View 1: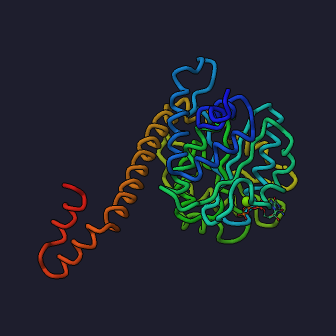
View 2: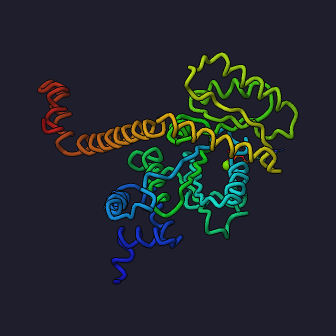
View 3: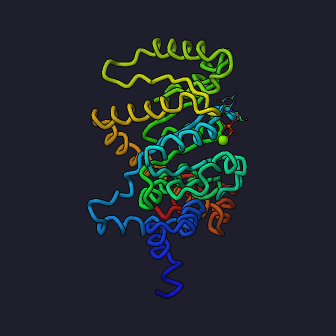
Length: 328
Ligand SMILES: Nc1nc2c(ncn2[C@@H]2O[C@H](COP(=O)(O)OP(=O)(O)OP(=O)(O)O)[C@@H](O)[C@H]2O)c(=O)[nH]1
Ligand SMILES: [Mg+2]
């Protein structure tokens, strides 16, 4: 095989799917960068699908677990502890640490690397940071593609840790099969969670740092808020679990809650429906991103400048000018 074939999208894809971790990292970098490379990878992933043996996982088949919550609540520590529990059950698992505020990526979030370092030499674990590069659609577009790549590379579980609780994080976290919201003991945390829009997306609440005072109260506050939320009979009522991620206490129960929620989604048919809805959302985001890109293109050229002059002189109107730029 020539070098070109090996380093092209198909060659890289094949190497990543064979378990070559360096190739997998390169593929994820391309997805993260966006643009023509990301497009080539996406197409290569799709071409892989029809030839795949039935026993192999489909690229969309990874089960995704979002882990979100306020900065410092213990998301990375909990993720690391969950990795331990999952590896103990022989589950292969990838972690995407998504940081919309950071310009760094590719595992450059040193703190996360250190905390997940317990699993650095385990080939059943793959940890990767992803950051915003200001490209087409940003992380909301890159994350689902990265999940597909990880699925094809043999990671049927993907934990998506999002930093912070802004709109982007809620968007990314809301696009996983199961969403875990990490809170801490202390007055008002449940209220904060409600304010940040986390009540709507949480399938499981983890009251982490349960070694500190107030964990039982935090759990009670959350249960009370859930009581008031008037959840329909057949719907999932979010579970509230106490954990101490640093010692691992309660982390088995977090894993069990994830399994319970997954079973609920599968048996109720909601998993398939949720994934269809997410696919629709993903296409809508791509359309919006590409229209925004097209808008930037057509409004920055010579024709746009000429039309602006004409509008300023009163020789055209903005509707007509826009139609001309769009070729309508
Ligand atoms: N006492 C106690 N401390 C904890 C626990 N879990 C995490 N911590 C500590 O809380 C701090 C933050 O933990 P991280 O895991 O980095 O939290 P994070 O939510 O990933 O933080 P960001 O990614 O910066 O938003 C660290 O000093 C942890 O050691 C816990 O269960 N009990
Ligand atoms: Mg973290």
